[in-house]
Length: 59
Image (cartoon, rainbow, N blue to C red; front, side, top):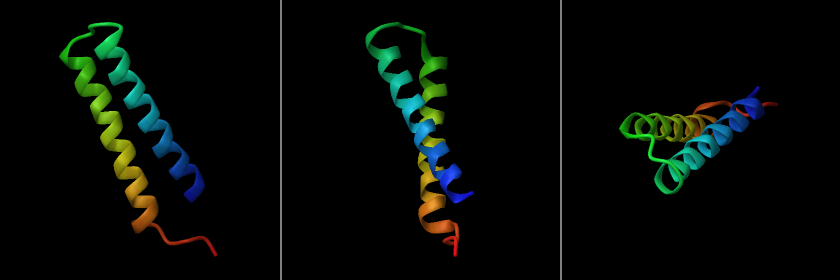
């Protein structure tokens, strides 16, 4: 379970970062896309923080 949550955190970070880069350099989708991809990044960071410090290690 913990590995799945950690993997989903990395996936959210990848989606958010690539989305922000594409929005900045390739397309101009506007403020809504920027905020959406920033929320993906924040959710990924929170997920990784929870897996590192908040979840108990599997025995």
